[in-house]
Length: 236
Ligand code: C5J
Image (cartoon, rainbow, N blue to C red; front, side, top):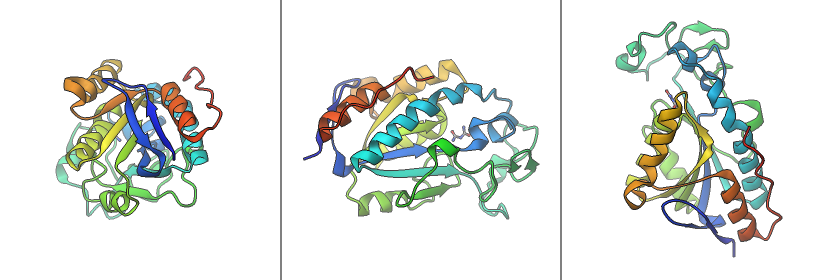
């Protein structure tokens, strides 16, 4: 029961609802909105907005299907004791991690900017994994949480595609998980990085995992659960 297939590249992704988790990576105001960490590094944050609607549709469908959902947030302790010097200095930012910005202290746990955007906000029963690095497995209990739940496969949405999504998918691969990345539910500040980061995942027979999109995933999930497919929309 709950077995399905998602049309994907480089070949179809087979999954079981019970052993698959949706991982929502770093959908934080600090990356998605102006005035946060992303903008402090000189980025135009607007391209990231495109992922929010498709990711919301996927999140809703996974919740309805009873799939396990886990969220991650990149950030640091208020005393910055887990912030490496290299990360603090890197990029010659306009304001540094820990400095006061328009959405509170940049990339610091507990600040408004560090938290997840409203439309994708976690609900009860969905763990939030706070991570100090780019990969969601580094210095966190994510692997323990997934193993306790019997999870073998991940469906990944998040920002940014080439940084925290890619790093997390690579870490997951090394730990034996199969990961499916939904191309319209991940976003980058750079169109070329978005394209290439997805290419890298599915190259060489799926060296790190699979790539599909919200429409094909929602169809596969609906077939697995016997539900009406949720409309994929235009992704805007
Ligand atoms: C970045 C992330 N881009 N969540 N973090 O610094 O991708």
